[in-house]
Length: 482
Ligand code: 6PG
Image (cartoon, rainbow, N blue to C red; front, side, top):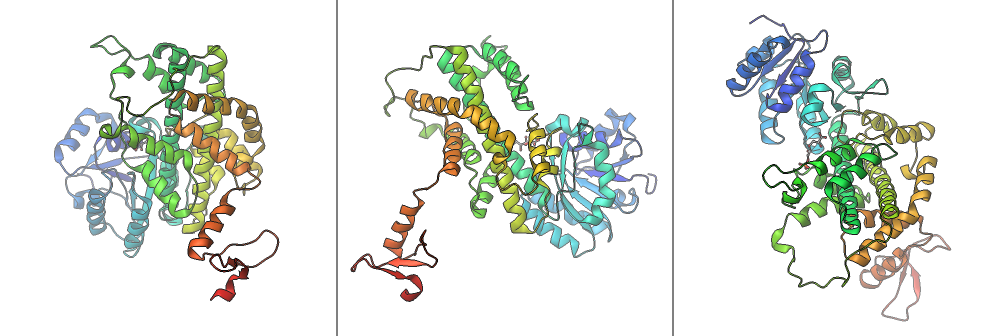
């Protein structure tokens, strides 16, 4: 084995790791060291890809000595315990100034903890979001690294060389310190959940409202993909709907069990948003919709729970499909807007300086939620970097104004027909909540004060007040109650 032959290494050679290693090796100037816990995977990768010029290592000591200084290694193993085990090994064989990158879907609070622990040894630890699945890892993912400024000096050029390119720019930026990269990747996945649920609701409404077949609905999605909804998820939806099951000859979507899986990143996005007090209702409904689908014992399909007598029949199929398209577009704007709000709140809470415009740009290529309208998000932040609510940017205000009539028709049609549309309807409720001059929160404050003396503020004068509900119901300055 040549000494210090490689400028970067990859640990964990399952499909994501080996594809990322091949991507790295294919770029000018890179020589890639590879290590896997079981030797077979390493041997297979070397045998299958001689063109990559990999430097194989069969122990952590060998791996470390095959890397030039500062040693840089990307870990691509399962989140949780396996990641901690690899970090421990690398910390043992690396030296101060070296860089350990975790490219798995780690929980950002784990990344904050690991970064702190590793920093104490003088080694840099970088939590990096990697999006784009197997193909993205091989051909160009969207990359969301956190970690120190020092590590970015070494990592920046390497990551720029392997990332997807959108509008001539590599889809990677230094997101922020410690867990910022994994936080942003988590929110990316939350938006992904919302986007997928919205598309699924659109499909369901069109199918039940117009009687179109999956293949015909595939044509609708293919058409939508030529307009403002253009995105990877719309594109693959058309392909999924067109697929015919070889065994039965029926559309594949009709023989797939209707119980959605989840690895947990959607739930993390919602749990974190609850802690931060950010209403990501579209993402939450999408996550809960997966939970509802995957509890067959709770799904009452026997007719016990009454529904509307009539099935949905729409008079004008084309007009209905156009309404669904607009409802989807408006709800999608809400999902992204809520996601960006969560990133802003997370940055404030954890002390990260995150450039929201840069995030929208690195999501334009490589990742699962890549979509044409991310350009409009980037434009919006370029015009107003401190935009409080993304969807109040002029482009989105115009789009929502154009869509809201259709959006309301679709949500009420779905409710009348008993067709679940949790993400469409919660997104509309959020939109109307933001628009409301007055919210019934005033009543909630009254209730809280009634049973718990939690106090309230008034609209007409400063101070904090409490009403003596059980006495003569006079109002007193709250400070007086203590
Ligand atoms: C990506 C994906 C990727 C993975 C999801 C799937 O950005 O490339 O988001 O990270 O496919 O974790 O998540 P679920 O299994 O929870 O749907």
